[in-house]
Length: 557
Image 1 (tube, rainbow, N blue to C red):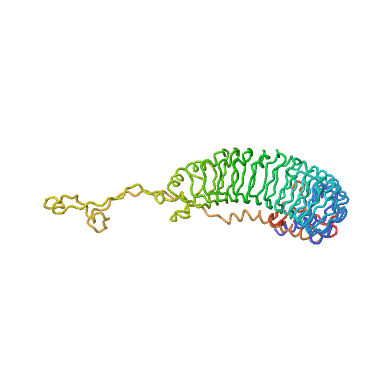
Image 2 (image 1 turned 135 degrees about the horizontal axis):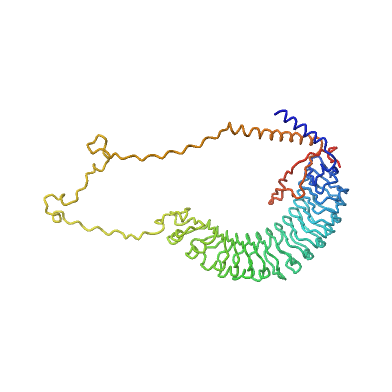
């Protein structure tokens, strides 16, 4: 075994030492992953790569950092210590399609830094410390489709900053410090399909979002702001399918607003201050499939509240103040599959509602249920998917209605016993037979009811044939660890030895420079991000190849 390990070790080192320059067909990689804790700038790179991923301490992306590499299509700096991007840093990247700088200390970018990236389609600048977006920052990006600016500290965007992004389809400005948008900021984004600006400090929806310019919008997400009023759009948004307005300060809904969204499928209104909504407010949303009005202040469902929602499949009313439901409340919801009424003030359900709820996935938890005989009869009539935990009466508090004994809630129909008639005088009522005991049926002596003891004079016990016991099934044999070890050791030992050798080889290469990893061009790095705190936690560790640099901090080309 020792000789085998040594042979593998020698072969591995010889392979490492004999790595050929990038031009050699056996060592050319479509992409590399570079990580080093001593790098301060972008090192020289192999000529044959089309993708490079940097992890570690690249503090500065210097001017013309990628000169001589026009073939690069994807460049990513993830979780690096980058604080500075010099002008013309990306000059010469004529074929670049994806650029990402995320999880860095970067606070600003020079104007026109991307002006020569004519083929750029995706630009991600997330989880940095960028404070503002200037007018000329994105100039020259005529083919850009995906722009991600979430998780920064942006508090201002200059007017006209997005004017040149004619092909933009996705824009994410979530988790910044924006209080307002400049007028006409979005008016040139005719192809925009997805707009996200959640978790900012906006107090109103920009009017140009509702203008007739953004006719291709499919999703608007402005959750987690300070919006109190939903303005009426100027034009109908025929393609809008998802509208997220949750966690704002809305206190009312206007019927006319929703007439402008005929294709809407998801409407999120959770965590607002809505106390009621007018009859038919959703009647024009005939394509709606999910409606979330949870955690508001709704006390009653007015007649016709859900009129027109014939395709609604999921309705969430959790965390409101609803104390009563009528049989007609859900009659328009023919396609409903899921209903959440948890954490309301409901006390009872009618038989008709039991019938309706029996066809759905229903949640009724955390309501002050007043369990009674009528509810008990209905809950026992079939197997329901929901559980009702009683609050009242006190004797059944915190017990499941279906598990209760019926007698606890339903009074018995047995009449109460009447007062016993007075017994006649014994001397006159008894028969005149000399021995009164002869007229009574003789009761067996109590001793005859007891099982006779072995020494008693009673008849011997019945000699019955004992049933033959079925033979027990043979117990399963215990795991034979000796056999297992004989099978596994020859397999596992070489694998462990191989892992040990590669670990030593990795240490050897790190002692000569930084680690270089091969990258599948179709594989996007797997990133684990703490969305709540906008923090990059982990980047997928990609498979390694050993291409030691000629000098520490550089790769031979």
